[in-house]
Image 1 (spheres, helix red, strand yellow):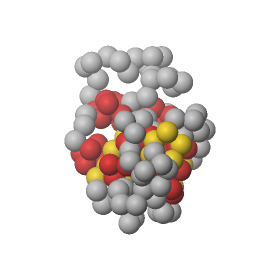
Image 2 (cartoon, rainbow, N blue to C red; image 1 turned 90 degrees about the vertical axis):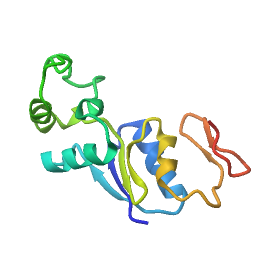
Image 3 (tube, rainbow, N blue to C red; image 1 turned 180 degrees about the vertical axis):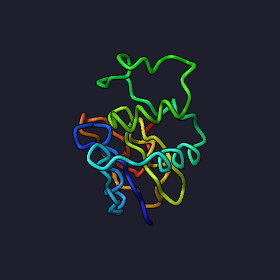
Image 4 (cartoon, rainbow, N blue to C red; image 1 turned 30 degrees about the vertical axis):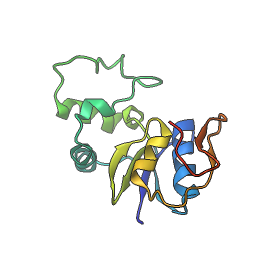
Length: 140
């Protein structure tokens, strides 16, 4: 299965998502989007495939979101894309692309919706939270 993750190694959620992908036996194509930001067309493609508004992918915490006034409801997608292109940190992460769909994987276990679900083995996140129990079932 071909999987792409738009990843930030400094983010715990992103690290857990990547670990879950690898845990099911898939080595994804990892795009460190702060080093190699997706272009406008790719961002629009991802948003369209997710079926969500572009605004829903904006990250507020630890970004210049407030300083740039990005909370203003009258901003166009073009203006939001301009901001993301100038400050890639505004793009929330991790975004995962698989043959089963495209999703912003927050929380990290949301990635399981995009991966094969047969023969799951136990998995515990960095913080100790159980995601897959000893019987191979997702814990919700």
